[in-house]
Length: 111
Image (cartoon, rainbow, N blue to C red; front, top):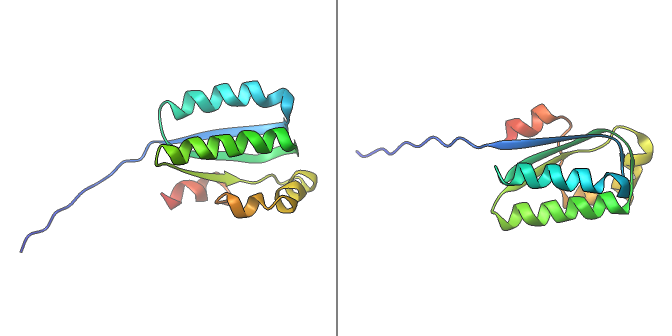
């Protein structure tokens, strides 16, 4: 009998957002995403504390998703708790585009 064993360690980046995720936050978000994606292609975006989320934030998420997938990585999103921001997620069907988790801990446990 021959048995091969292998252990893989995955480096997972976590971006935690709060307050408003709109055009005013894009530069900061892009810089943080660039920094973390230079180190890993697995990412959790924690938006639980985001109170407002608009089309600029949606476009930024799609851009990061494309970049991660081009690098053969994966992404998980913890959606906002605030009802107004959460409504945008369901109305735009973003909850179908992104794999979501109820918390960062549960997102990390998937990998």
